[in-house]
Image (cartoon, rainbow, N blue to C red; front, side, top):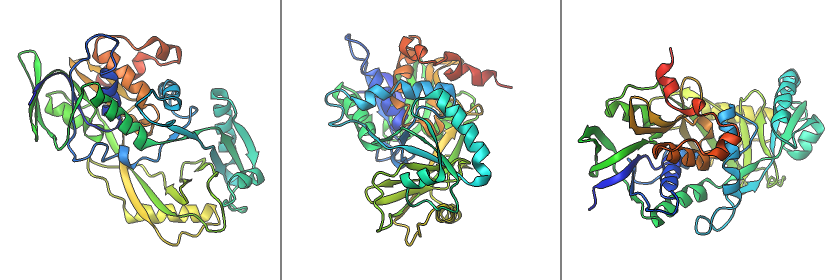
Length: 382
């Protein structure tokens, strides 16, 4: 079996898959030889496979907003062979407020309307028309904006399938045990064998700092945080198919319909070590309590429950690009809750930086500043 590659990508979640895909799309010349290794028996087992992603262009720091906008066209019209349908589908997003939260909602509205078209401030009656499950006693006002659901499975599998079609290799059950520089190349030792590569891409999600330490580089302070999701049946007397994703303006909960069921979360952010995250009973109870308080829904039975880890650097921005201490070690980590909707642009930017090219011009035009994403800033932090 082949053991020498140009690039070795660690992690086959959305970050690794999109970067590996982009590396194999480099122009019309020779396609680089790319290996992607994944510690689990299934790609996307952790955070990617547990995401109920939503596409909105008005939230998050400017770097994430630029990366989101830079991904939209690809999601709406994926290339032939990537997916057999659009990756996104329309679904509005509704932020709601109690009477005591209206001031916060008004500030939120002013921020959103400067960042994107179609944002509307609405009264409680209009909010309840858009989502008839909402309680009249709870909801005083709302902000509605256009947005879209993302088919996470189709997107992730499209990256992997296209990567393989272009000659890329994916090896599962290949947790990284150690990395070292030998003769100007990386030797990466995994549970499936050892491999050599000129460049290593660290797309290991919650484990990215662990991988850096294995490579002999100090950690950058990545903090994984647990997010819980529950699923239950939608009310039988209400047609929920067209409900918007509904979010408390204080970010205490959110919920949205999916195939006759409701996905809901208490929007928890509990610091966790890198692990196979599992939902805690207290977070499930909090989710149910908050949904029932804001709506006329009674959660009779939890159909399923899960948790995933979203990872953050101290400044809540991603690290994309070569490590300043060792340029052949490339970071693609710290996407927080924005990893799915930004993945296409992040893959392109990471591939460009990994091959010694600058941030693509179209991403600069969208407002992406290299200084906001390069890992250098994390080394320099106090």
